[in-house]
Amino acid sequence: MPGMGGATVGERAHDDTGALRRTLSFRDLVVYGLLFIAPMAPVGIFGTLQATSHGAITAVYVVATVAMAFTAYSYAQMVRVVPKAGSVYAYARVGLGRGAGFVAGWMAMLDYLLIPAVAYLFSGIALHALVPQVHQWVWTAVAVVVTTLLNLWGVRTAAVVGFAVLALEIAVLVVFVVAAVWALAAHGAQRGWAVPLTGEGGFSLDAVLAAVSVAVLSYLGFDAIASFAEEASGGSRRVARAVVTCLVVAGVLFAVQTYLAALLAPMSAAELAARPGEQGAAFYTTVDSAVGGWLHDLVAVSKAIGAAFAALAGQAAAGRLLFAMARDRRLPGAMAKVDAGSGVPRRALLGAALVTLVAAVWAAARDDGLDRLSSIVNVGALSAFALLHASVIGWFRFRRQGAPPSVLRHVVVPLLGLAVVVAVVVEASPTAQIVGGVWLLVGLVVLAVQYARAGAGPSDA
Image 1 (spheres, rainbow, N blue to C red):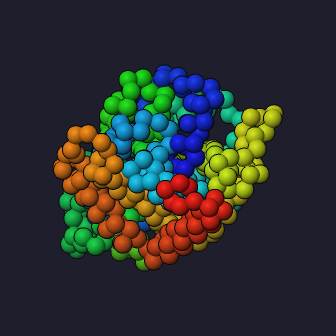
Image 2 (tube, rainbow, N blue to C red):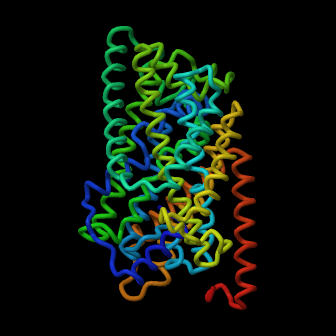
Image 3 (cartoon, helix red, strand yellow):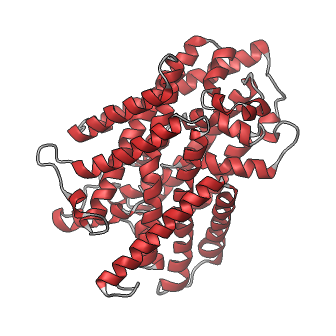
C-alpha cells in the first residue's frame, strides 16, 4: 500500500534478511488487489452517490474508472523504476526528492488511518440493516474492538481467510446480478434504462464530478499491488500489468452492480438527497423491495464480513505504517516497539485503532457521516496520487539519465492524471478540503521541524 513506512519496511527487510521471496503470481496479485478493494465496494455509498450525482451513478463509476486509469498507468511507470515496497512514498522520493516523499507518505497516512474507519462504518450499516434494534454506531464500535483484538493477537491465517471472504463476496455479487436481471425481466425498471448514465432530469457534469470525489473511495486498494513488487515472480512488469488489470475488473464490476441497482431503486435521487439518513442503507432497501428479504440479508451479511476483514487488513497496514515511521524517527519512538509474545507492533496498532474508533463512531452517529468521512479519506489519497503523477514527470523528464522521455507516456498522461485529481479535489466537500489542507499544513510543519533538528536542507533530510 502507499505510505511512508512501506519503503522503509521493504528496505530494512532487504538489508537485514536478504531479498524477499518472489512467490506471488499474476493471479495472486490481482486477487490481493480485489480483496483490498472489495467487489461490492459501492454498496455502502450507493445512496450517497445517487443523491450527489442526481441519479447518474453508473456514469460516476465510468468517469472514476477513467480517472483512476491515469493513476494506474503512473503506478505502472514508477513500479518499473522503483521495484520495491513503499509505493507512493518511494516513488516521490525518487522522482521529486525526499521532502516530497515525506509529504506523499504523510498525505497517504491520512487515508490509511481513515480507510479502516470507513470500512467499519460499512460493516456497522450492514449489521444495523440486519438487526435494526441496535444502532449502527454500536455495531461499528463492536467491529472495531473485535478486529483490533484479532490484530493484537496476530492472525496467521489471514491470507486463507482473505481468499475465502473474497470468494464469498464474488458469489454474492453473482447472485445479486442474476436476481436483479430476473426482477427487471419480471417487473420492469423503476426509471428509464439510460437514467443511471444520464441522471434524472438531465446530465450534470458538476454533480457527477462531485460524486466522483466520493466514488474513488471504492478504488482505494488497487494501488496496494505495487507494494508487493519485491514479492512478485516475474518482476515489476508483472506488477504493473496486475495494477491495470485489477482496476479494469473492479470498474466493470462496479458499473454493472450500480446500473442494475439504480434501475431497481424505489427512491429517486431527489428523495435520497432530501433524506440523508436513508442513504447509507439505500442499496439494501433496493434489494429488499425488488427481490426480497433473503437477498437483502445475504448482501448485508456479505458486506458486513467483507468490510470488517478489509478494515482488519487496513488497520494492520496502518499500524505497520505508524511503526515504520516511528522506527525512522518520524513519529514518537514508543510506537516502534514490537510485542515479544505476538510479534506485532502493539502500541502502533492501538494508536491506529484509537483514531479509527473515534472517526468511525463519530461518522456512524451522524446522518451525513458516511459522506463526510468518505470524502475526507479521498482527499488524502488523491493528494498522494497527485504527487505520484508529478513523480513520473520529475523522474523521466528531469532526473533520469540516458534516453529522452516519451512526451506522451511520461509527460502528457501524468499531466492528464494530475488534472483529473485536482478537478476531483476541487469538487470535494468543503469539510474534506479543510481537513486535507490542515493535515498537509501539519505535515509541512513536522517536516520543517525535522529539517531544523537535523540541521540539513531538504535534499539531505
